[in-house]
Structure formats: C-alpha cells, structure tokens
Image 1 (cartoon, rainbow, N blue to C red):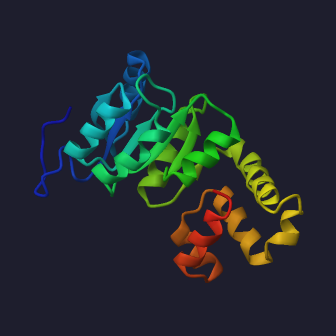
Image 2 (cartoon, rainbow, N blue to C red; image 1 turned 120 degrees about the horizontal axis):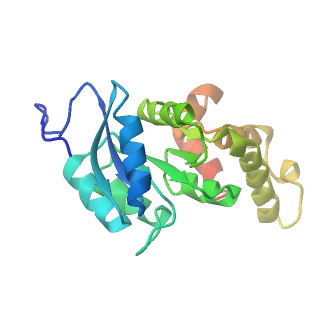
Image 3 (cartoon, rainbow, N blue to C red; image 1 turned 90 degrees about the vertical axis):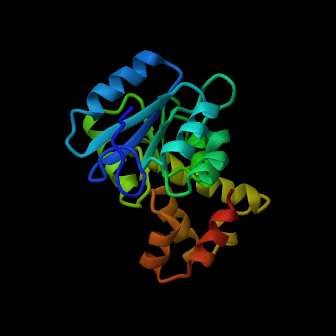
Length: 208
C-alpha cells in the first residue's frame, strides 16, 4: 500500500488514479498489481480478498476506482455494491469477473457498478475500462454489450405481461434502454437525449 498522502488526506499520488484490487485469489491480485503499476497514471493503494475487507479498505483509502470480483467467499461483489457506495460515494466500482452471463452485467449495473469487464479481456482493454470509469463514464465489455441490450428488452417484454417491448414502451424509453446497455451513465444518457436525470432513472427502474 502506498504511504504517501496528498493534502486532501488521500493515500497515493494525487496525480494518479488510485485503485483497490479485490479478488480472493492472491495470484490474480499480484498479476493485476504488476500490470497496473507499470502504467504512469495508475497506482494500487491496497488489495482485499473479501467483500467485507473491500468495504473497509474503500472507507479508509477512498480510491478512485475499485476492481471487484463477483464471486468471493463470505459474500459476492454485487451484494457489496451498496455498502461500497456508502463507504466511499465517489469511488467508481469496476466489476472484473469470469462470468459472461448478461444477467450478471444487468444486475451489476442496476446495483450501481460503473463498469463490467471479463477477466479474459486483454490488458489494454482493462486499462481502457479503468480510465473510462474514472472519467465518470460507464464501461461495458464489448463482447457483452449486444447481449445486454437483448436482455434489457427481454426484461421489458416480461414486465409487459407478454406484450412486445415496443408495444409497452415509447420510442424514447427504448432509446434510453439502448444507451444503458451500451454503458452510458444516467447523466450522460440525459444529456445525449435531452432528458432529465430523473426521467432516465425512471426508465431504468422499469427493467430493474
């Protein structure tokens, strides 16, 4: 863990993106640390092996980005998202997982994750994901984006008691769902479609 503290009290170099790694496999954390710290704009502040430890570390260190596995002993990563938001509201959580089921992606985004990337992604893609979520955007693994959109529309259809989603939702509502599936934040969707953030949140809740 870095021991340098900036004027705001945050550990690490304030010019770098501070990261916490959360995975129950030490070898995975070691490999990630080695890769990330080779980048001039990234610094690993700490590691954690459980969701509970991740919450403690986030509360203490207030990282910019927290890389979080989904499946861990003592409680999964998705279940910890609410606690992580309370512990460090400004931290952007990027799910890093082997699970390629679009349902995991959907639940993670609805639960507050800023991004979702698979562990088999190339290193350059992971670095892009980290920098993207740090900039306030949402990142979705490209291999899952199309499936996520289909899943969102299928959920809308189920919620409509068997009707086609286009019969139940307006064109604007469907476009909001498309933007969500592509990984945009509520604020970005609102800006792109000239809506209020509250309206976007309402549309998003309909398929959560």
